[in-house]
Length: 465
Image (cartoon, rainbow, N blue to C red; front, side, top):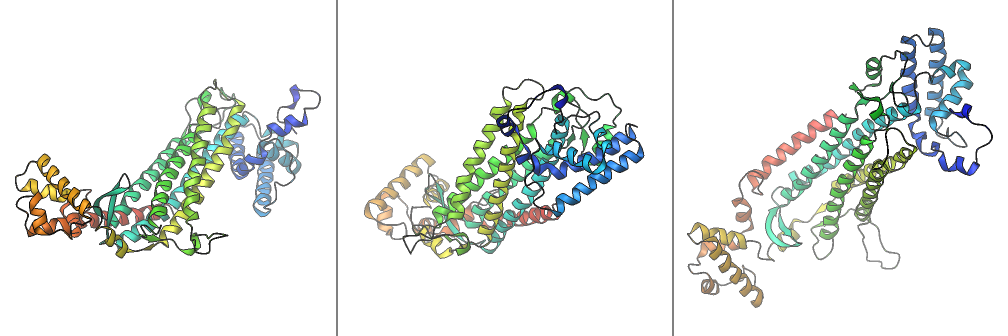
């Protein structure tokens, strides 16, 4: 069965049939297709294209198909239809008879596909947000339980300044919150109805698109039929949101890969999310994190593929757009899987505060605090920076930490060295407490941020139920 066969004669090349089919991919749209068809039956009935009895026959056939698909997981096996829309129409005709041939009145696969794609995008963004919420909850839970733990903060992967571990966790919380907001933005822009646009110019039948939009749960009707039938912005936006989410997951995974290595040992992955070596018995490899990091590259490739397909297409619909489904489905599946594993890794992560504390003694993390303290005593910052830099160089050469430095040694480089300066140089707790401004790592600020984060997670989980 072809939806366009009347114009053609003879047989098509089987190789071309195989090359051009999309059923293997768009079969995932089957429930959306049935849902849109059912709503369209009501629209055609209201437009007096279908008689009530005809509408009942078609609706009953669509309901029977839905039950079949939901009951039989193997419904698609062995099917040779060109696409899922052709399959539905063919099966519907077997069930409901000739009247099923009226279903296609006033519509095209173009506006049908565009409608189902948007319904999928709306659902996919919700599923992704729910998975994000679980990851956010795991991060906040660790932040609350380890709110006083201090670890080295890094720039260039070199020790920089001490920070609260909770502050570190909340940095990723902010990243993933932005990812959630991008998914919501994507859903808002996808929330408009293409049906009724026809192939490109609209339909001559009096289909009430506003009523149809309400029936299908769309917020509004697309304003331009030429645009909406060929618009794949929702796919590109969804892939961008997924790609950036995966980039953030990849950064987080990279941190944990480093922090779980023996040289750092700040955290330890649960055995359930680690693997070993077929040769080396001692190995505990962070494969769950490495797979997240690796698969982020797949998402970037999917996004670039979609943009490359879109960039040179003339208005309106072109068959190139069939390529949207492979990258969209892969993108969503990969991101959803990565988020679900990330949430479980985070929830089961073992934190080692004692190791973090020990590492704060290395790297001269309080050097900036010393310079700031000297500024408070009237020393220009440039001079203070120079003095503390020389002090660090002396310690590095002598193989000493600030804790091991004698007052006499320090006074030779920084005049006026006293017990208070020694305390500034050696107290990590004092260092983090000094940064008591909005967004800083001071305990008071971080406690407020944890409370805010807990509230956001609770609201998000309630909203997404």
